[in-house]
Length: 77
Image (cartoon, rainbow, N blue to C red; front, side):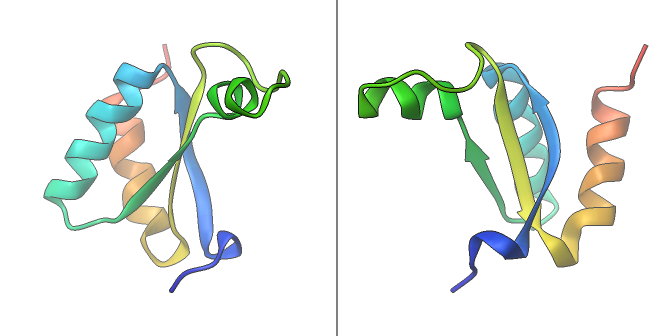
């Protein structure tokens, strides 16, 4: 089983964009993990994170390939 240290962040954005990117990565057999600090904070009874900002992480071994896919999917303007 992978630990939190084995994952690297490749994208932060809206939940819709993160879900779209996660689907693209799944098609490439790249496992990923979503982290929503705001939603987690609300569930725990305290604030944390920014509303609407979700982070997408991949295992370190897939980082370069996944980052390239993320940049191609959502190029910076």
